[in-house]
Structure formats: C-alpha cells, structure tokens
Image (cartoon, rainbow over the protein chains, first blue to last red):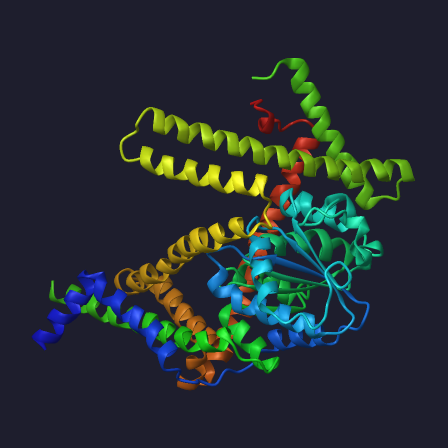
Length: 276
Length: 211
C-alpha cells in the first residue's frame, strides 16, 4: 500500500509521467489500430445527406477557415467534405476564407484530392481571404461577391471567370459549407442565415462546438460535423475511411486517459488530505 | 485627443454609416440610397484593410524598438519575428501567395510550429486533469461529472463502456449547454445593440479617442 501511495504521489508531483502516458496513448493506436466501432450521429448524417442531395447547377460557398493549429482536427474533415463535393457532378464551388491562413489549407486539400474533371473557373474558384472580419466581411460577401473579390486568389478578374457570371450574391448560393474554428461560422450565421435564411453546414473543432450548439438546436446550422469524431463519421458515410477514422482510436485512448487521470487524481488528493 | 471639429466629423460618420446600413436592412429604400448603403459596407472592407496595415506597422515598430534597446529576454525573439515577417511578406508580395516558395515556407515553418503549440495543450490538459481537477465541492463535482460524460460521448470508447454515456452526454449538450450558451449569446447581442445605439446617437465615442 505504501508503495502504491508513493507511486501515486510521484505521479501527482511529476507531470512527466502523465505526459509519457498521453504520448503512448496517442502513438500506440496509430501503430496498432484498435478498430473501435464509430456510431454516426444524426448531425453528421444530415450534413452528408444535404451535400449528397445537391443537384447540377447548385452553387456552394465553401469557406475553408483552417489555421495551422486547427489543421490536426479539421484537416481530415475538410478533406472528406471537399472530396465529396468534387464528386458531385455539375455543382459550382466557390472557395473563400475568413481566416488569413485558410487559402493555404484549401490549396493543400485541392492538391491532394481527385477533382473528377472539374475545371478551375468553370466548376470551382478560389477567391481567397474575405477582409473586414465576420461582420463587415460577411455582410459585404452576402450583398455582392464581385465587389469583395474583383480578382480571384490568382489575380484573374472575377467577372472573367465563366462560373462567376451568374454568381453574384447570397441569392445565387444553395448551401454554405464552413470548415472552421469559429471565425467564418459567425459571419455566415449572422450575415447570411439570420437575414436571408441561407442553409449552413458547419465542421468545427470540438472546443468550439458548445458555442454553436444553440444554433444547431435552433436549426440555424442544419448539419454539424464536430471535431475529428465528426470527420471520422463523414468518412464512413462517404465509404472512404481516412485520417479521421485512423485518429479516432487515439482520440478514444487519450480521452480515456484524461478521465482516468481525473479519477486517480481525486483519489490521490483525498487520500493525501485525509492523511494530513 | 482629436479637435472638436474632427470629433464631430467622426461621430457623424459613425452615425451615418450605422443608420444607412440598418435602414437598408429594415426598410425598402430608393435604389440610390440602397446602393449608397451597400457602398458603406464596401468602405468598411477598405477601412478594415487599412487596419491590417496599421497593425503591421505598430507590431514592426514595437519589435524594432525591442531590438534597438536590446531588451533583455526579448530582443532575440523580436528579431526572429521581424525576419520571419520580412521574409514571408517579401515573398508574398514579390512572388505572390500562390508561389511554391511561399507555400513551402508556410507548410514547413509555421504549420509544424503552430501545430506543435496547439498539440502541446493536450499534455497540459492531461496533467491539469490529474493535478487540478478536484471534486472540492458540489459545483466542482457536477462539473467533473459533466466533463467525464461529455468526453466519453465524444470518444467512441464511451459507448463501448456504457451505452448510456452518449444519451446523457447529448442531453448535457442539448439542454444545459444550449441554455447557458443561449443566455450568453442573447446577452452579447443585447450589449452590442445598446453599444451600437450609443455610437449612432453620439453618446459613445471612445473608439475615436474621446472619453
């Protein structure tokens, strides 16, 4: 008993042990996947079904607002969603970013996925960063896309891009898909969904999800893909398991470690307190 | 402190912009006025771009001063920041953001650095969970219980341990979390509305340096 107490006290005082355990719980599932079953939530299913039901001619605003810190959590989902969008024939995809780093990750995903013959300017465009933040930028984009982007990301006149001739404002957009750590979601919620009842699907980090939970429950966000778990669910729905599914085992193991840490930490704390 | 005349001009511009945008949203304005309101939003975009430049200049000045004064423990970090800023900005402006060199620097410089910083949070959370997350009272115990249930709801392993975790976890997210967040969101919205009204009526001008 004394030995156990000493071990727990060491654990309590030296964080390196917990760090090592966490590192192991993250690495081992990658090297040897556990293959735990992943149940698909209705919120991810709705997002998938809405995208899957898009018809030729439908216009999608795809806001890729991933930054370097959030890439680990949003990269898999962003890739799965973009891959799915590019598989749907005839839809037009307008890519924008409310995060200054977003275009780099949009390009990274575009380089990685199969575009299924979609041509730049005809089927998809990358417009780049929306200046002005969520309020002014979001409102300006809803009102006139061409005024915000007179040129696309590559410096081509937006009006000269064939698909942009008929895409001018919120009226021409069927669905907004926002892959985001929070910045763009607010822009679309308050400047598009609120005033114009636009349809919004959001994929965001687990940390940001509680902030937007009321909007999902109120129907302002119709499909809600939360964190790496949501990304794994989307990959399973698309029948293309990838990084999301592979990461979910590490997610399970690390969450379990944190839960056990809380329980063991409390046992140690109260036993030490009682002895004192 | 701005002069009396410039203060009045600033207040007028704020009131004019606010009234135009709100009127265009709630009323059917003549085409010329509606177009003017949309232009006000575009002016906002242009002003936001100037704010970026202002922020950049301020940051560069602050860090240049750190280097010139050799501020202990800081000047070398400021030097790294300025070099990174100049290199990234130089390549971005001269070669363009679509240039592979710009992308290479980002993918191999900032991405691993920022990713590492974000990932290291996990280690602090695990250590914090062990050392600081204590059931010292009823509130803390409820908080710990809710946190454990929500964590096990997010991770597939939770459902394997007990099928009730997702049911309770989803209820926590749907009811108490939604109720709390709704209160915060409505509070922020009411506060923003009051602030906007004070700006439009000229009662609030601290944004222009007027107390």
